[in-house]
Each structure stands twice: as structure tokens, then as C-alpha cells.
Image (cartoon, rainbow, N blue to C red):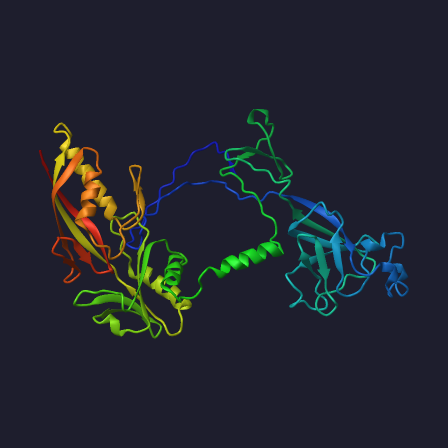
Length: 449
């Protein structure tokens, strides 16, 4: 929630230029006096002994002055090891967060004990306790060797935060909350407020969820079996690459050493050699047995997303943790192939704005060849894949689907890239090596009657 301020301030920030940004950082919002809150309430409960009844304890006869015989024996410690207790009111469950636990003797003297995760590091005199089961409110104490035993006849009281799905409230964004002097809040109408301090929810609240049961755990385990954790197939590798921690990856393609095609000169790859990153060139990849080649480009707003060395090295280090011992992995540095399109177009009506139509044709071709899926002017584009050939028929279909175009009477395709990165067949179609991405560089449109 955010507290209302009577004064206004200005905040100026300068973005330091850095070539590692694939998506330029953008300031979404500035939130002042903002807190995150968990819905629930604090309760204080007496603990009921689940262990042997106090009257059956062998220590009663030896310690008659330590026990209040008028008290409920189930609310007292029996002085034995490994005692477990329940909260007194089962309607105040589950335990979300334990706040404090105090042990009180018959003379009303109390002492605070400390919550720990387990008794492994607890000594005989450490006043520790463990919340054994938060859902059912079960608390356990030590055995005298790992964790002190609560003295016989003492009462135990715990204070904790609780909440449940039934009592949860969904609070919408922009709801006003009154903050009273007891640090609690309540929903109210602003015109009826008598409090001097109030807040506004910036985001809608989310509901909690129940603890996972055995059946749900079995279902989740079966689903996790379908998630690849080792690079066995190409699909496994693509999934692991797409889920590289800390990176937003736009597209991934994996090839074996027999599938990868290169120019007659070489291909540039990134590899881990003796624990170090190296950029090397390979001129004969088919000789590299048990090797997979990975191509990846970042998710970016750029028309030609290009990975840098930190991006590729992060992926390579992540795959290295999941690859088989006998499999070698190399990151291929992708290459963009510039495509030039020349076309003669017959229009349906001579009164059509030709400049506008040329722009529409260029936009349609430009966004079709962009590598990442995106939307433009209400139309979804799936992205152009690695190594996908460029056929005249596809270009003609894109142009002729634009409103105002009657037909394409002639078309010519050309490309520019490194030596051997593409080829043209007798029909004029362009074929690229599978580590390249075709992208539109120029479109020359002439109109005929």
C-alpha cells in the first residue's frame, strides 16, 4: 500500500549506455512508502500435550511442588523427552509464521523459547522448539540431549500468525485501507474515514493455496518426469536452452554435426575448453562426432537480434551442466543474410495512394522476415526460422494478399552475405545455410497498369 503525500518531488535518472542490453530498460513506476502485506491475523494459543498424561508421569511424586494439581494435566508439560503438543483451538490453523513461545511455571514466571528448523545443532541447555506440522499445529520439544525438555508442570503458550483460504479476502486495486493505532487495517469508504493515516492498494491481492497432498504430489512428480533434465535429444536441448536462468531467449535451433551446413570457408562457434571460453572456427564439422551445434538469439525489440558473448556463454555453461558426458556442445554465432526484393505489381485501382501501398508492402515483407514472433497492426507474425529458404511464391502470396494489389507480374530475389552463405537455384529461389537468418534489406516496387 502507498501512503498519501502532501508534497510532490521530482526524480531524475540517467541510463548508462551498455551494449549488453537486448531490451532497453524502461522505468515502469516509482512507488513511495510501499509495503508488501500478507493477509492473516495473530493469535495466542495454549498448547495441549499429545504425549503421556501428566498423571502417569513418574516425576509427579518426586516433584509435588512443581505441579499445579488443579490445572488441566493436558495443558502441562510432563517433563519427559520428545514431547509433542497441539494448539488448543483447531479453528485457528494453519500456522503461517511462529512469532513467540513462552513457558510459564506455577508461580507465573515465564521464559521465551526459540524456534528452530530442527534439533541437529541444539545442545542440552538450548531452549528450542520445532513446529513439526504447520497445517495441524503440532509443536515438538527436545530430548534433553538435543534441545532442553520443558520442566514438569509448566504451561506452554504460543503466539503465531494464521490465515486460511475461507477467510481470505480478494482486495481489488485502488482500495482504500484504514491504518489504526494497533497496526491493523479495515476496508472503508474514504468519506467516512476518521483516521489520519490510510493507504491504497496498488495491485489486486492474490489468493493463498492449500498444502500439497499425497495425490497432488504424485501428479506433480509424473509431470516433472516429462520435463527434460538431460540433453539426450535435440528437443531436450532446445527446452533446456529456452529455460536458461536469467535470459530471455527468442529462438533456438539445434543441429547435429551431420546436419549443420556451413560456407566453404568456416563457421564461428563458442565452446568451453579446459574450463575456459574460446571462440574458434571450424571448416569441417562433420568430423566432430557426438557434437551438437546450438543457435540462439535473444528476445529483443531489435529487427536483427544478435547475441553477444556473455549471452552465448551463459547458455553454454547452462547446457554443460545437463549434457551427457560423451556429448560436446558448441554455440554457433548466427549470421544474417540480407534479402533484396524487386517486383512489378499491378494495382486494382489507379486512384490508390501508391506511396502508402509501397509502405504496406514493405511492412508486410519486413515483419514476415523478422526472426521473432510478434504482432504488427493487429496481425500476428510467427517469425522466420534459421535456414529457411526464400521462395518467390511465398513473396508473391504476401504481396497479393495486400488490399489494393491485383497481381504480381514479375519478381526477382537477390541476397548478400558471407561467401558461400547462400545459393540461388535455376528458378531464382534463395537457399541459405541452416545457421543463417534471412531478413529483408530492401524492397523495390514498381506499379504497372
